[in-house]
Image (cartoon, rainbow, N blue to C red):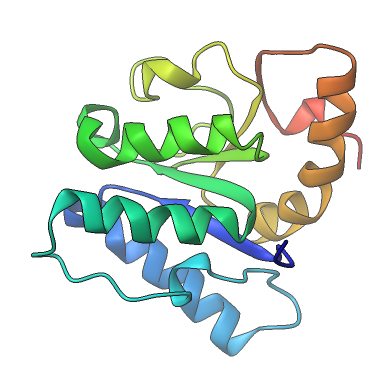
Length: 162
């Protein structure tokens, strides 16, 4: 079994890739303070690859991940071919999920969040560097504790012990 230290990020690449690139820049320029170890460096995927090949490569990335982050933008909930599939895979692997709202909301946004996550244990946060760094560190452990108590609902930052 591989050592899992990566964070898998799912997003609408056409609309929200600038936020993903910002997370990579935070890691590059402030690495020790921003605990982001990107699962997408594991293998390369060409955009024109067939769906089966893309999903096989994404599964490899997910298999090496300890956490799943969804960048939740205006159109993310409509991305069923890959984003919904990625969420399903994260749930299947019991990965701790953080949903980063790109609209500034600090809790679940039922209008924008993909329906598959409406009743799942996931931490919903605003896209802010300090919040992300803090909760990447805290949420993994607390996710499993909350699972032990059969808690299965969306969470906000106030639900996490600091």
